[in-house]
Each structure stands twice: as C-alpha cells, then as structure tokens.
Image (cartoon, rainbow over all chains, first blue to last red; front, side, top):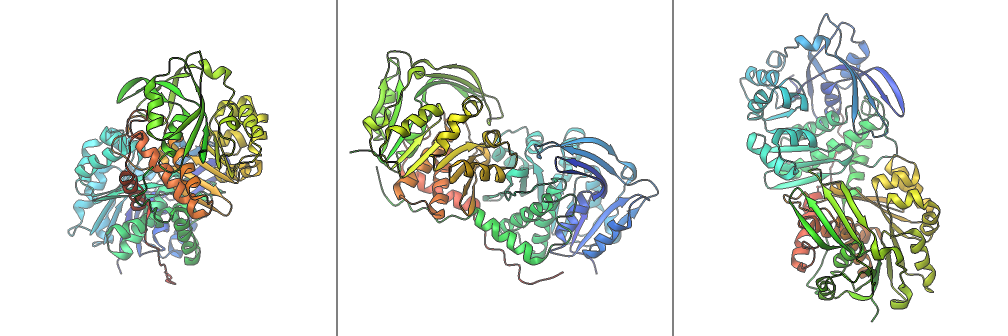
Length: 312
Length: 312
C-alpha cells in the first residue's frame, strides 16, 4: 500500500547543545522530524539517505510510527551530521559544524518507491533536486509543499523560482521570505511569493507562531507558551509534518481545514520543543494531542466584541 | 464630572524618522497616545506636563477627543522632546536624542484633579513618582495599571518592586520581563512577576502581538498583519489605552473581558502604526473600530479540532 504523504528531506544525526543540556548523535533531520509528526494523521513515506553508521534505533522508531521507509536509502558513507548550539535565546541556532557526508551524492527516487503520493513534501534540499523529483512523477500530487532556506535563496535562486512555480504550499521563515522577495513587510512578501507560484504561504515565526496566507485570508497561529522549552531543533519540520499530515488526512484545502492544520502543526511543534530531539513527539497519545489542540483554542478564543453604535 | 480612567505619563514632541518618512515635533508621549486610544471607550483624564512651546493643536486634539486635561500642567520650560529612528526592522527604535526639559521637575498631582479614578494607569515614569501618586489617593482605584521600562528596572529596581506590590496589571515587553525577573522563559517570568504583585501581566511583543497572563489562563492576541506600517511610535501606549479603556468601560476583569480588552488594545495599536504619530488613531469611527475587531476574529478563529479516538 502506498503512503498518502511522502516527505523528501534529510535524516541526520545531530549534536545539539542548549542551555538545558547536550545530546550527541540524536535522531534528527527534516524528513525524520516531519514524518514522525505527520504519522499521527495519515500514512507517511520517507525519501532520504542515511550512512552505514545509522543506528537501528532510528529505523525502529520509524517502524514503530508505521512510517514507510522503503524510500530510505542506505549509503556506504557516513550519515549527514549537524552540530548546533542554542544560547538562552532559543530562537536562533548557531551551526558549529555540518558534515554532509552521504547527502552529497543523494539523488532521491520518489517515483520508484511511491509513484502516486497524494501529498508530496519537498523538505529543505537543493531546489534542483526538488525540481527533478517533480519531473519523476507522471501524476502531479494533489498537494505539492516545499520548504527551503536562505542558502538556496542566495545560491540557487533561479532553480528555486522554477520549482516554486510548481508548488502549492510554501513553508518559509520571516527572514527567508524577506530575502526571497526583497519585501520587508510580511503581507507584501506573502503577496510577492503568491505571484511566484504557491497559493498558500506558511510563514514560520518560531516562538511567535505562524501566519498562514491563503487566497482571501490570513490566519495567525500562536505558539503555545510553555514553561519548559528544552530544544527547538526540528520544531519547524514538526510543524510542517503536522500541518501536511492533517491536510492529507482531510484532503481539503478550505480555509477551515487550513486553520485547523496550522493549529495541528503548532501542536506538534509545541511537543517537539518540550524535549530534546524527537523525544517529545515520538510517542504521543491522541488524547495528549487532543488536549493540546484544545489548549490552543483556549489560548486564542475571545467573545465577539459588540461595540454597538455608541459614540463618545 | 470626574473621568473614569486617569492616565499619568508623558506628553511629548517627537522627531521620528522611519523608512517611510520623517515627522518633526509630532504630538506624542505615553499619556497622549494612551489617552487618545482610551477615549473611544471611556471618559479619560490626563496627568502630565508640557512646556511653554507646546502647540495649541495638541490641546485642541485632546479636547476634540473629550479628554479631560485639567491635569495637564504647563511649565515655563520646554516640552519633553524625543528624537528617534527606525530602520527597516520597525521593531526597535534607536533613540537619537532625549531632552527631558520640563519632565525633570514633573511632580504629578493626581488627587488634586481627579480624586477618585476607577482606573489609574501609571504609564512609564519614574517608579518613585508612580509610588507617590498612589500615596496621594485616599481611595485605591479599582484597577491600578502600570508600565515601566528597562531604564527603571536597572536604576530604580527597589522603588519599582515597591510600587509593583500595589499594582493590579503590568504592561511590559519581553526583554523587560526577562530583565525584571532574571527568567528567560516568558511563562516563568510572568509567574515571577505575579509574585511581585500584579495579578495580570500583559506581555507586549510588538509586531508579534501580546500575551495576557491572568490567574488560571493565558490569552494570545496577535498583531494584525498590515500591508502599510509607517511608524510604530506609540503602538504600545495605544495598546494599553485601548485595553484599559475597554476594561474601565465594562468594569469587569473576567477572562472574557480581559481577552476582548487585549483585542481592543491590538486594534488601537494596529491603527496607530498605520500612520505617523496619532494620525492613525485621532479620528476613527466606531464602525472602523468594529470592523477591525472583526478582522481580529477572522485572523484567529478556527473550528474545534475533533480528533476522535482514531489510532494509527
């Protein structure tokens, strides 16, 4: 059986230091975080590469979440490894080291393993690779979602613009949106991105939540204020995984489902940051998730303000 | 007739430069911005000082908004003058010059003009002065709200802690909250501030909105994403004015009214930033305001997420 949501991205081993601790060779990567968050909502397949040193625990974890790993290639090189550090300002990661290793020769074969995904999430990889993946598929997925980063905006803008024309939904952070469009104002930046292709722009603002721009509206999803935030690594990928998992499950892109999907994304991100690596997202119950989405409703709901025709 | 809401703070003449223009000797100051925003919701009195150079237009504007200016002293010195600049990042003002002028000898006499305010807003002035104002009043106002800034947290912390013990509601920005408590995490910082006195903490996050912490809950009010933001000066004061004006009008501090009041504050702030000085807030209709509060509902509302008992 073919999974409904296919995520192409990285699987990594992360060394992360935050003010609350250090983890070494933690299971990570954009596709890994995204797939785990999405797996609560729909069937998920992963397309990525790992090295000969990748531990069984990573494969077992994917299996325990029912994630289809037929698209996970095994290379004879080492696994992609990222070393990062967060200071007390947990918003910005300082990259200490990046060893691309097996990622350098990564040539993902989506169509081979999953010829007809409903939703395809092209997580942050080279936009030329993202474009080639779309070329492989004879049937265009119902929803093509894409993530990118400042590095590609600077170094491969033409390739990025080309793949954006074939994209329905873009996840991007504030500074990347500004860099991509040359617009400082985020409303204008979203308008400019819409003209590049994607009709839905999900602007990620870290601890300030996310803004979803769609045809005819904007939705502001807050981040949950948490008393314990240990490690923000993977929060954006967990957000995207939850969002796209929910959208795939319901197969609808109405404003109502988009809004709920953003809250589901924020919910998964809130679990992610509460612990190191995927410790916060790997074994949740639907009860825990349901309680957290209810907390988001509590966080944002207010009674309509009836001003009447009072004049002072 | 005595006004229900009394605001003690500054009335200033501001020279402001943003990427979208420059204004000179613009009508400003915390009490000025706050009073105008509040005047749509309740009767407002202002306690501040201006110099001999203060223009008639400022007084006329207060009068046109029905603001009681009996508490506005006239000094023989010059008016407090602030010169500031915003770069493309409209979040942070760079102060180029501050001439305190008549503010140096400001000794506000609240009780003299307004002996029994329902709500007293002690905007950002020296905490020793804030304390003396509370001493003047024989009847404690129903609601005492306070604003402060990093300067006072650093230089007069003892006086600030003393007046905080007599405060019900504190408006404070993120970095000030962290500085005041030594807690980086905002949920913990709010808890720590609650132990200092104020039961309601309004955490101002600029373009990211505000978080209201109250006994038993948190409310996240977003900022309205606007296509045109010209000048953020006074946004925080307009927010506080709208919030306190609404709370004073309804004389209730239930979670529902607090939430609505935060949205009213965000509404007034959104009008404020859309133009220079008070141009965006000085002559609104209740229709415009009502439409904007409706837009905040559109921005944040989502249907309850029914997860059911599905297990993957």
